[in-house]
Image 1 (tube, rainbow, N blue to C red):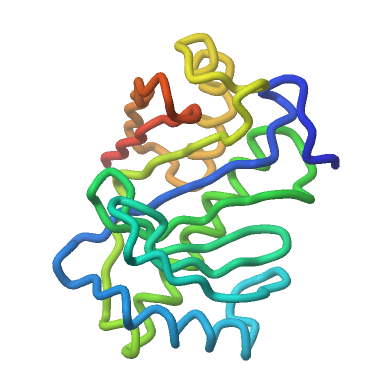
Image 2 (image 1 turned 120 degrees about the horizontal axis):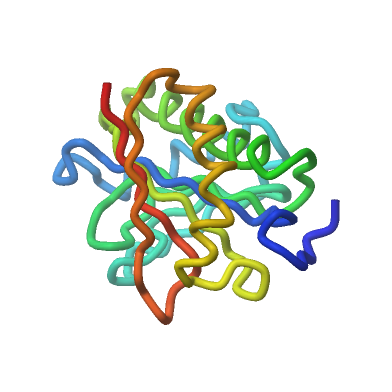
Length: 186
């Protein structure tokens, strides 16, 4: 599938962020060698290329693991550290499956970090997350995009958390990409 999209249903550039349960415990300097280790041992799926340190950027990407298909990061956006998975290309299937794949990849990254003592034993919540679609033409940050994405997002979440109550709230930022805050309970 091409990275060029024409409608939100074609979106491939899908990101998912899981927030740190104890933001004060997240020390960015620990993640540089951890991410280098991921490259060496292929800890997560995909071609992993390099690690970039953006700790100097306020509320920025923190520390990034750059990949061919996707990037991973300890993201500092919104003033809330978390693990971010951002798909860039090569994601097939209907939108609910592509969102589900991004959800799964974020969970895999979080679990890898939680299990790694060199990362400082961070914990990432699974009941609040941020889902972004980084294609402003196909998915402008307007209420209509949320309505177009809602069925696929609910289907993807329903398969991963059957019976959970789901709350969706569009992040109303006219300068930002389409983003929706997801809260799960039960």
